[in-house]
Image (cartoon, rainbow over all chains, first blue to last red; front, side, top):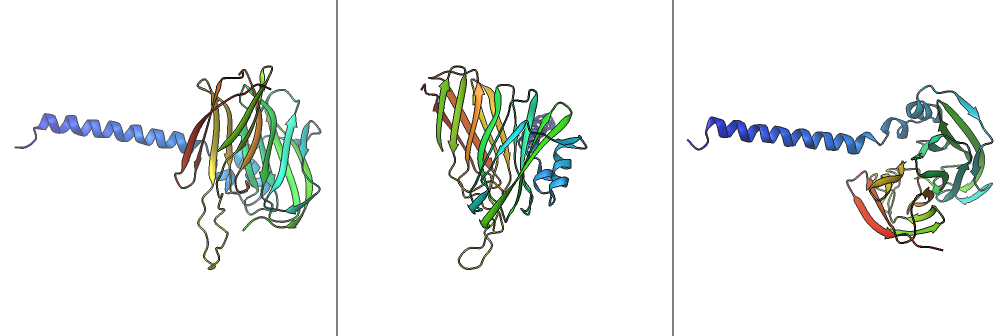
Length: 152
Length: 101
């Protein structure tokens, strides 16, 4: 006999243990990225996937800076900032894109709600920023005229 | 990755440029074939073992993503670690030194 019963069970339980560790690690890695929200085809669906049914209101406290006209939809500069206390998350959407949700930022305890990035816009449409503070959502939208679309 | 992190008082302003094609999965190459999707999904910044920035990206973020953000509680000379992962299992992690003004 090459392997005893005891050795077999010892080796087998070790394999099971390392497998479960692998599974937990993979879940932790992928759990963060919100596939449902990023794959939603409509802005409202993306917001619901991200935040559930939290109430939304337009707010001048969410400062959204975008160009009025973007020559190239492949690189549209977007900046968001706010002095509102208690913001825990900020999301950015381009309503005319195939997948409207562009990016989601966790405003961690040491982070300031002051962000910039460049986004793709398929065509002329609104850029929307939504900030979560407490149990409410605060929204700001601005129209960007796109000369040449940047998706595809 | 290219990064500039400048401490001014307690607040660090970070400008980050990541080289990545951010393929949406909808673009066609010169031969008319669809280029498979490959885009960054998560970017994380940490300082002394604590996450100070975490972003999730979709394919709507531009090629060669540019980001700027601010966080508090670090000073010039400290190390800022940046990491990202993409949809194809690609990943990169680099350490940068925060500078003063």
